[in-house]
Amino acid sequence: MRSRPVDQRVRIRILRAGGLVLAILMLLAQPAIMGAAHEAIELVGVGLVLACIAGRMWSILYIGGRKNCDLVTVGPYATTRNPLYFFSTVGAVGIGLMLGSFVAAAVLGLAAYLVLHATAAREAQYLRTLFGARYDDYARRTPMFWPNPSLYVEPEEASFSPGVLRRTFLDGVLFLLAFPVIEAVEHFQEAGYLPVLVSLF
Image 1 (cartoon, rainbow, N blue to C red):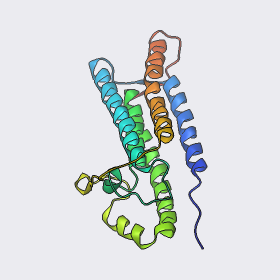
Image 2 (image 1 turned 60 degrees about the horizontal axis):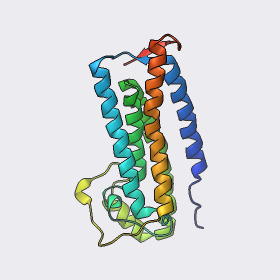
Image 3 (image 1 turned 180 degrees about the vertical axis):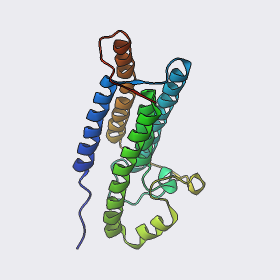
């Protein structure tokens, strides 16, 4: 009996709940590290979010519109079986750093990793039923989550779905939109319009 595809709604609900917790954290917490060090931490966070957006778009160029229809094993999928989830985790860490907090970066990164790693494990079971020995061979040589760049294989050509690429870009922009919101919250906290209940390192 063939198993069913993973219900992505559960993952989406969990990540939305995490976003709500993040929003509350933003309104009630303030970074303990300020000044030039704070700005540097934020810039690293922005860099990670940009890497997330670029990595997700790169991955979608290979798998967009083909998920569960074809076994993609080249490009970013040659280095990890789940580049979209890996880059999303990088983005979660980046958002934590944009808050100017190593604690927030660690918590957000770990939460994203746990949710997405569990999703990837369930998806692996389904892909095994679809592709059998081909998937087993792919899984033996390719890490499930953390990329191994030495495994990279460049395809001769690749096609992509413009609609899927556009949606992925817009999803990525949501990561970046967190930055002006975070800056606005910090401004209102400094002006005394928002309470600060805790400082985060």
